[in-house]
Image (cartoon, rainbow, N blue to C red; front, side, top):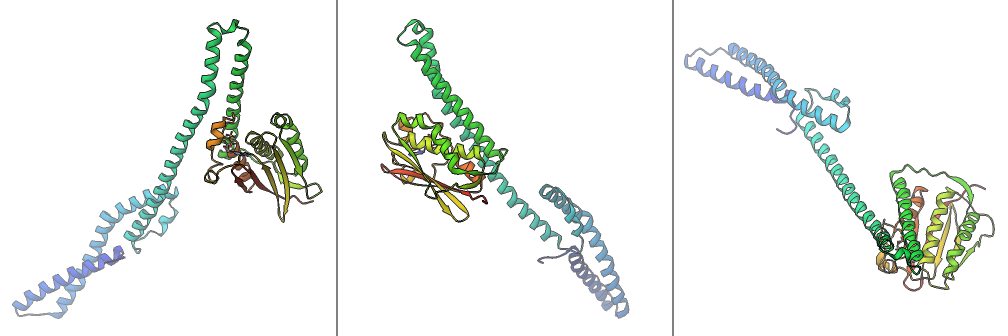
Length: 349
Ligand code: ADP
């Protein structure tokens, strides 16, 4: 009875009925001892035709219409259009057709539910992380203000110091809000990359000079090693790539050792240019490498140091590089140093 069409079902049922009726007529004729084969043939064929159409109408009325309604509902939900209904006719295996559609629909629904669940847990985790990050600076500010209000304002030894500390916490909150703004724009895809031909050496020089003061504070020497000995043209969004370089260099300073060095190197990789930012700082344990580019992920060492970072720097870097359809990698050894390397597409000369 597998893969039966409504017509097939009607035919089988009407054959059973026709045989039953014919046998009854045959038996009654047999007992009255007047068997007429022509009348038996007429009984068989007429009962076959009548019951065939009867069953077909019944199937159409009571089953087919209802299944068609289910089919149409699923189909519309699935495709938001019902063009495939044209193919849906009495001659086809309607039950298998509907069951295939239901299985397919169920699979798609399961995937959609999984996606929604992931989004929900991502949203919950994100809100938790943001409120956790905001808590520290807000409580710090509140602590300084309360001390000042309770008389500290008139104490020459602490008043300016506490105001400066409160201001630092405000700076930290602003940095967090700015990073959150960038990351939400990058994740929602509304931040389009403005790709232009840029000389990556010049851009790197600009970033290095903007970070000179910060590097000097830790006596870290930042050097650019252009082994290619010529301008290096890449196709990139200058502003975003400068943000990538800033984030990587700031990290190399923050997690670098006093008196250490950060080297920036460029390699020709056929279609791409590979840019490396290498430090000889504290390094990162292998177990963290996989998750390091996640939002708010910090290594235990990074956390212990409380670098004042937002925990979003590397997540932003990864998003920007991926928006350029390129990749970023990390090589690192604890107490030896870390090398972050990413590629950019070469621009035509
Ligand atoms: P943060 O604001 O905490 O610096 P990031 O996303 O920039 O956030 O970095 C995530 C974590 O990766 C840091 O907290 C730190 O533990 C680790 N990290 C990043 N860069 C380096 C580096 N150059 N050397 C050692 N650890 C690093």
